[in-house]
Amino acid sequence: MPNRQRGQYARTAGRRREIARAVLRLVEEKGHGNVTTAEVARRARTSEATVLYHYPGKDHLLVAALEYADAASADHRDVVLDLAGLRAFVRVATTHREPLLRLHTVLAGHAATPDHPAAEYFARRHAAAIDEFRRLVEQRQRHGEAHPGLDAVDVARQIVAVWDGLEAQWLVDPSFDLAETLMRAIRRLTAQNWMDVRQTLLAPETGL
Image (tube, rainbow, N blue to C red):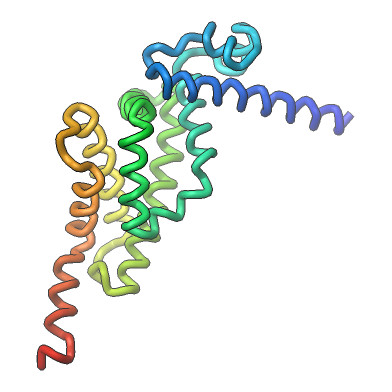
């Protein structure tokens, strides 16, 4: 009996992944506004009834697409600990995954409604992002690249807010360089420019 339950669980999890992958592909190809349960079912080679059994509404399907994309890129999350890697990550996202960014921005707005399917997802995602940027700030503090008196969690929360806000602006007006603007914001929030000047003034060759 336990083996049968594990097998059923594995099949259910596998089916959910297939559906989520189908939704993600549709979002990338056609945009989130054109996702339909009928097309998802066709892509996932199942029935609409099965799709709706696992995901009872379109918003649930769209959240599943974001979760699937997150899981697929989990191996690259440590890129946040390096600003050069983060810059490259943002450039790839804006060049190749604009439909996914649009979906993210739209659902982030809906997440403000407590009972919306996106609310729990974004609560988890924000917590994870804040923790990642906290590690970035703390690492840069250890290396003398961020002001040592800053609260790393507070700065991390601000970085996440700036990133989301800049991304929303870029989707409306892509005339500015999102990656470089984000890098400049992080340098300001971590007082990197002040630290650079301080290190220059304290360098032995300055005689100070």
